[in-house]
Structures are given as structure tokens and as C-alpha cells.
Amino acid sequence: MDFNKIGPVRGPGVVRYTGAVRKPAGAAALSNADKVDFSESGRLFAQALKAAQEAPAVRAGLVEEIKARVQNGTYQVDSAALAAKMLALGIERD
Image 1: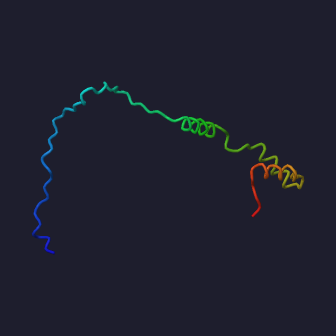
Image 2: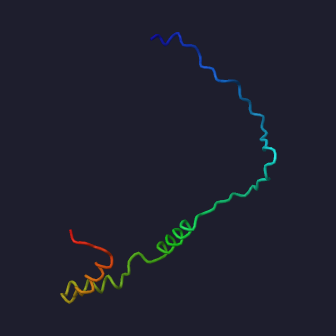
Image 3: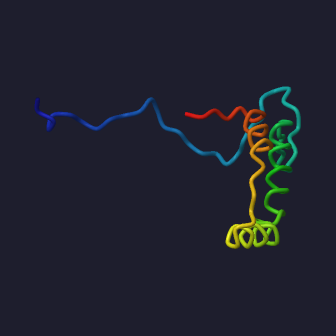
């Protein structure tokens, strides 16, 4: 195939910008203000995200207390409470 014989590509016609934008007949007047609508789940997500961002990252006092108890051997796990929580969350052993 000889591509040298292919001439310029021409479109359907010439497009000229006139600087004016025409609204369709019967179109309502538009506001210049931007508008965004969020769904209810979007609003709830935004609230949860804000709450998480404003919450302290770590409860430092609790972490230090548990760390000290683990280090000195006094930390005890309530196995019945742990098992109940695992069942409530649907955690299964693999």
C-alpha cells in the first residue's frame, strides 16, 4: 500500500466561532452560580469522614496502659467476651 498517494483529510465543513452562544427556544434562564447535589449516602459519608478526621488518631492513654500491662504480665484477655464479639461480628476461624 502506497501512503504517499493519500491526500489531506477534509472534514464535513468549516466551523467558525462567532462568540455567541444561543439558548434553545423555551430554555429556562440559567444561574451563574455553580450547584452540586449530593445523595443522602454521600452526605452520610462526608459526615463520617469529617468525624474520623477530627477524632484523635490513637487513644494514647489506653494504648500506654495496655502496653504497660502486657510488659509486666498483668494483661488478661476475657476469652468469653472475645468469643462473643467474634461471633457477633461473624468472624470464623480458617
